[in-house]
Image 1: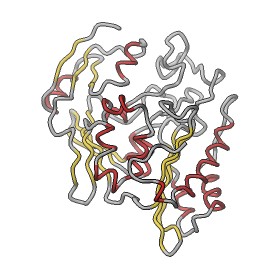
Image 2: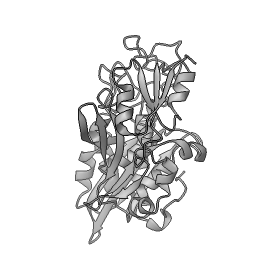
Image 3: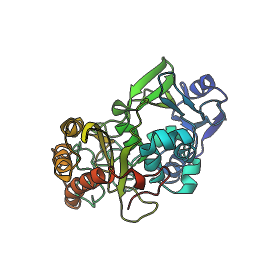
Image 4: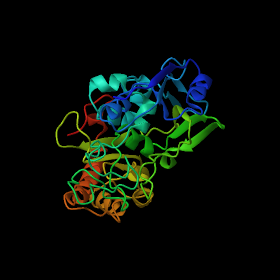
Length: 339
């Protein structure tokens, strides 16, 4: 690990000042990803600014509009088991509990979850070309072992996927990311926070330089009655998703009034499908309609040598998730991830 400077901030202002005009400075909170990246030789910050002492950023509190504010420093475990999250946003609770291990969820923060980097094998191997780690060096995954890679929104420069489970549910729930930075505070729609690789795969999100995530805001509507998060992976614990599906809807007179659908493990960002959601509105919640919605969600999907199977797997996962969402009694808050 390379040497680096370290500072602790007690306020948001101190944190912003700590990274301002400091070359290769980075915030650190739970450290569950950035420290790994430093040990692998992927990340080389010259300065780490610890933000864990900033008060209030670890709170989970009600918003005036009926929504819920998740502090950026609240841990994933605290968030998943918070009574308001469990009962009003069980889709989010279930998605968080599908990610990582209990030990990591006890350390990892909500803000850090949004900023975690891809788990592409080549990204973590400094001896191989990787445009995300070293722009312009090439993408080893394109013609390498690409079983876990993306099938939607890829570019010739990168086919890596974003690994978070929590963020798939946040995308489906229409969350917003609140940030503070040198230019002041601003709010970012969750769908605009992460980005597709394009010709700049080294840029994961739309944060400006020196900006700090302060909270994640959930709208009042939580889809607490019909929902589920399905994560399909190579083993039942501590593994990243091959495919994940966050699906929730409201029913009125037996028909879907409003639906939300987002996929994980398929793209450089959580992949929400407005086309599939619009199709499901007014339809019966039956396999045939979920299958059509899946076709719309996967329109344009392209597989590579080792991951063609993910297209059909995603289609079947969406249909299964739709039918699972009709059984709220099996989706109790805090329930274990579906296999």
